[in-house]
Amino acid sequence: MKQVVLNIIVLLTAISAIANDKLYINDFGIVAGETKTIALILDNDTAYSAFQTDIYLSNGLEIDQEDGEYVVDLNSDRAARSHVVSTYKREDDAIRVFVTSQNLATFKGNRGDIAYIQIKATNSFPGSGTIKLKNSIAAEANATRHVLPDCVATAGEQTTLKGDVNGDGEVNIADINAVIDIILSGSSNNVGDVNGDGEVNIADINAIIDIILK
Image (cartoon, rainbow, N blue to C red; front, side):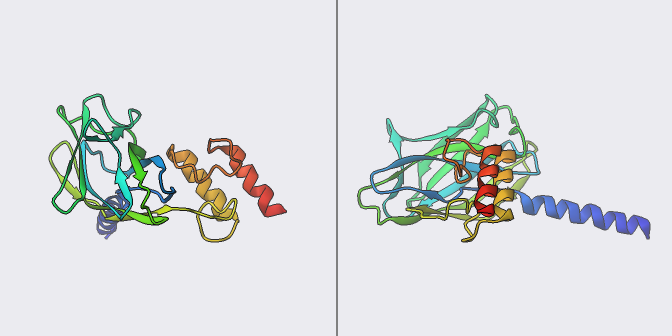
């Protein structure tokens, strides 16, 4: 009986690990005529050596280009030297992004920015839009394929309550936890920069506490 229970725990742990793996973009603010670099974030319990995803942008949003190539740069802190990124435009206008390694090197770490995408809001941008990641697949070095969940990020003019890091309309302990998550993940997401110094760190936690106490 003990062995059966142990087997169930191992199975549930494995299922949980798979469910936690995701590739996503956080919501971000942008206005017409502006270009922003946003993070493509990979949270993974499994060691992956490659991934692909299709990026769908709503009207008025596009991935910037240089010399005819879409601007998608790998994060050297997580990608190995052998990792390379390739992009192309699909017939349905999605931009497919591939990241591969010729020697099957795995990504470093289990959470945080994996690449950076330069997003441009055209002059016709209506003020709000979405970026969707679909058909996301990650592969282990042994060629095992994992389907990752789709995700949607909101882009546009964001008017949020100062200190409301998690966007629930209130400033409380949950926002402190959200800042801690950003700090521990090493994410470039600046939504937790409550004191406006350009960094997300312990000072922003103090700033939230100050807002709560007032």
